[in-house]
Length: 124
Image: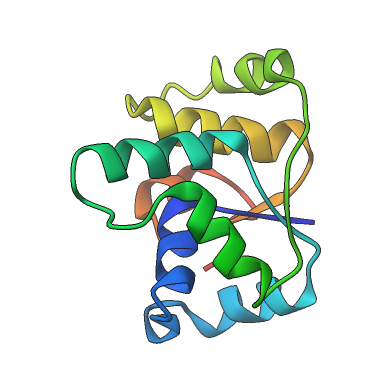
């Protein structure tokens, strides 16, 4: 199972697959693919501050036509439990996105260098 980081979801929705590495695209094609609800919250935050022009609901609807994408239902308590140990970042979204992948024992597809440096099995 693979979780997608927010940046990957945005690039897929924008059809900017040229920004996504070959290994990441192969992982997405292999699947199954999921996103943490935290990704939806971050997408909404980006929409609220004007850095994303499309709402999270529209992005997910759009992506449903490209890939069989689900929303993870791993418990928030498990996500936070894993996130508490991630002292290498101060970004709350990154901590929770990584925590969700760890809680579900999924590999995270991300372009984020700091995450990739600290998360064994991250895909890019």
